[in-house]
Length: 249
Ligand SMILES: [Zn+2]
Image 1 (spheres, rainbow, N blue to C red):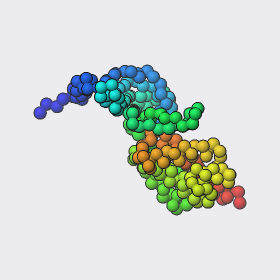
Image 2 (cartoon, protein in one colour):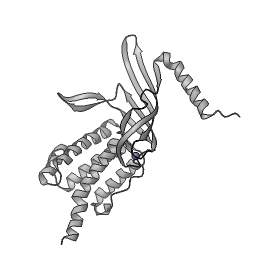
Image 3 (spheres, protein in one colour):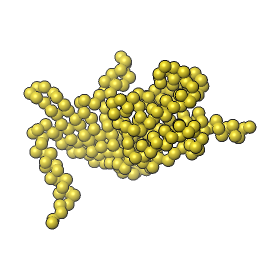
Image 4 (cartoon, rainbow, N blue to C red):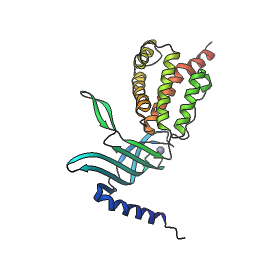
């Protein structure tokens, strides 16, 4: 048996796609090469500037006569962190059905959502908070399971878990209010949370909603940031007060 080389396989895959151009699929190479974007770096452990070294874009449009039915755009990129120089693979996906709402000048405005996947997953080796055993038992369980979901690359479950952590904190702190929105605001009133922290939690609340009800995955960068904020909250509410009590008796 003669095995084809990876390059031959890529060539034949591209040839196949070239044939499909007449069916509404377009391929462009190097459209974004040289551009600098923000992406999460697993080594720097934060969002950093990355340069796109190489990229191939596929886009498709379904049309019936003059009527637009469905469109999608996929981009496959090799990107390099401008801090530590490590190289990863990034895939993005957008389509005309996948629309989210963002705050704009005149209230909520629709926006096409971009889904991002990174290989290797930069959140893969995220370690638990030190002293996470100081969390109340039910909170410790949901926190550990959500961390496991994040590390195993399960973005929908991570989004749901983040929301469940916030709900559990609100319940445990006896935040009043008929919904999670009011309860988060009540934590600010109690002095448990800053106004800035609450603003971010409101974004996470919406994120968990989309994950739970619309089964929408979120990007690594969003989930990594969400986890940073949640951990900050857990530290401020449970872990640091415990240490303060121990050391300033
Ligand atoms: Zn880096």
